[in-house]
Length: 226
Image (cartoon, rainbow, N blue to C red; front, side, top):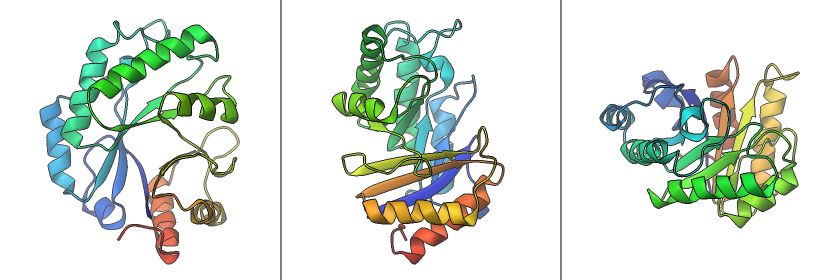
């Protein structure tokens, strides 16, 4: 069992980060860095470090906020493939908002995007949905197209099937911070589920501290990678 905690980064993690953590989400705004630059990100952290690539919004959505068709997203899909390859990212994370909706048209369009991304490499695709999706419906749809749904172990049980569990903790709405007790609950949830591989990406004001605390809690349980 290998469970890693980390945060989102927009630059290669430094020595302080990599001394405590061996996982990060590589995140970008509207810019799409060249693969050669991302190759230096990989070199900076060494082979044991794991990246997940968070697909930039512009690769999935048109300027009007509509989910792109596979044809319209072709350039973005090629960039995702090249970037994931340069980072040697094991996972690609897709954050979605109001679309795709639960309607069949949006499901089909999203499935086509997934097929396009999957054709470019062998990375695992993680979906972090929002909008009208209930957890059970999102999990069923994710399973039907062979991807992993990101979970929030503080608000739901970890009952996803498959060898990988991917969690994202975000300080939004009424949740502004993650206490040590909350992080202990996350560690307990992973210990109970015991996946072959697990990832927890924390996005908060003290995300590095939170992730370091969680990594230590997982290590105490023998759940974290050395």
